[in-house]
Image (cartoon, rainbow, N blue to C red; front, side, top):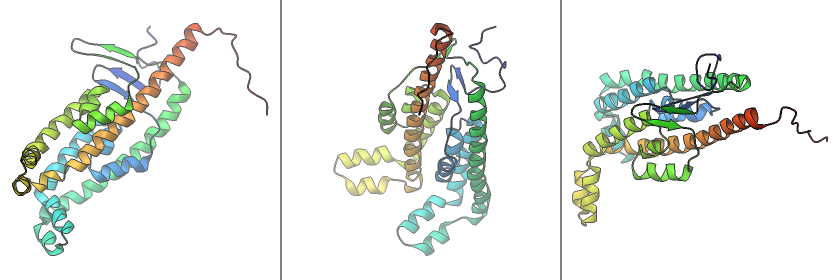
Length: 260
């Protein structure tokens, strides 16, 4: 039996390496996860690697937000036109939006608390996990990456930071929606006009309703890539340390603790 595979011989594992990415649990701040869910429903769950739930909430946010005109109302409120903000809201869709929005925040907080408890139990069990995965289309392995590079690539294009650390599923999802947001917001067209000095045309061509999705998307992509790079580096160090202790450290080796 190969002890370096997640073969359900342990009750809990702290990580799993597959061709689609490295999935792991580690201690997280529940308030930060809840905050990301508040910024954009689905982001908190993606940080927890709860992909299916995160994708559903993300798509729901985009669809219901556009139907209820929440971004349009926000734009009017930023301009100080509160009455116009109220008139632009579609209450039939808005009343659907509120309960699911609250659920996303609550569920991501609750799940984070539960996963923190599971991590402490799995850490105590300290069972080995696979560190290398090879398939017909991909290879993935534990190694250390530069967190700064994750930030830089994410700022160039959301999703590239995730590709850099081999979070394939999240990377594909983020890149796809980034393209959608770029297309419907006309942001790249506005940037081209701005370089040509056509400031008024650049302003007029923008679709602010779609443009408002970008701050949350860029912020999440950068944060997610950075945090997971740091945690993957810690995981790689832990796996290497465990391997060396098991295979090369003398059984009688002992470090005496300093007496105080």
